[in-house]
Length: 353
Length: 287
Image 1 (tube, each protein chain N blue to C red):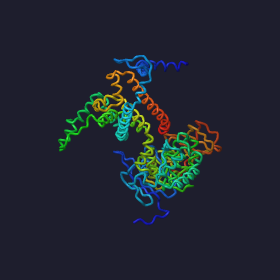
Image 2: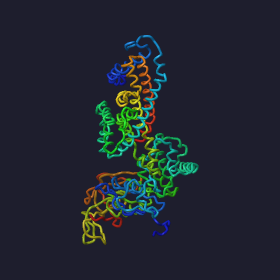
Image 3: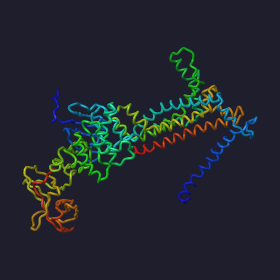
């Protein structure tokens, strides 16, 4: 009844997938389409259900409801060893009693491939993952970064239709993690395999992913490209979770204006009622001279090299508003200094409270 | 010797003194006896001889050694075969229930060894429970003679040492990182191949520890063969017992005992070495 799959069809379709652990609903009717050769990120705070979702895709947890379709075929009931999908474990889960070579060859031996083909494919993947020369090492003789590459090679050598990665960079230190983000993306591009990465690190997701899904309490909040999610969050939680966001609590009145004490902005076409205004620090400007803008006082200054983040206390917000300005342009501010800030109305998002 | 090094030594002193006085000294005494001639009414005559060790290799006695080793090996194998699935089941039970399951597995161990062995006499007897149940179930033939056989000895030994093996294997299994098992499944290995290639190799140290323990305790055991073997199935333990208490040949009993101790020490050393080598990889898996 299915039409022949084309390249535009999603490689993986998740349909209303749910998972209950006793009375707790860990994943709640999540539906997602993952495209072929996509680098997809499942993002959310710990306990949001992203790892459970990934474990259902790998076959370690059976769904309580919904289906998983891989290239149109329902794989929800298949055992892990029968799924053309592989998982890179957060702990890497390298077999401690086997050499690097044996670890990587393990999955191919299980497919009962000819020895020569196993050898060739292992050599190839070890070259790709920069592991040549480590064949005879035991996992305990490897650094964190090397272990991570062995885990990756061991999964990739199987040529899975989809590679699942559970916090792939979580165990690495910050410097290595930043390098590996780009490395992983390059590798994904080179091998042409669909990657689904679970991460709690929104920066990591922004850097690596083609598209991302944000989960909270088992529910899918938003799915889209990093740029879409950053620029147009559809949910207050997403707006707060991705990047830095200032919130000002106020209300939209019948006159088509949002107001909160000294803040007053025109907002056409929005329902009246209590509303939160959200604005990114880079969308808040500084008014030089005159009495335009919102009066405030600088409480903190953070210098980041490229830019400077001023924390400005205003009467409309309990927490100071963060204002991101080019460091070289806005030099010479001091803590305690009175300042006037400007909020660009077209950059604001509004979330009904 | 620095201050830091002295204190731990001092703390260990009571235990060391105890072992020296009641373990090492008697062993050395026995070792000494083995090189003298027997006295007529027990004890020794202080004339040096190697004859006692020669007699150990007499086919008559060598056969008992081989027999004991064979029985001990069978007991070890059976105990591991029974204990592994039990230990596996306990280690996979919900964490909160594991202590109570372990308690039940070890429970028989807290009752008296003799009473437990007598219980087997009650079970295996021609007029015993098993035969009664069989007859009640409609069995008409001669009652089965199960008691006073090698099989009864093996059953008794397996039963008595099972808790040790369950504990040893459980401790290996409970330290096994479950993500390794999942990784194996994920890479295409079914449950059986996962067990053979990942779970079993990584829990071998526990199997070896439990196995050596049972073997060593079984090969030297004399109570079980005496009670369940009915004296017809002599193991080294019974032979040693007889030499000291019946035949009044202390030096020969001592020589037999020394050989037994040597076998035990050799096995325990091998096992300790193997565990040491494997512990590196276990530590790695825990990280």
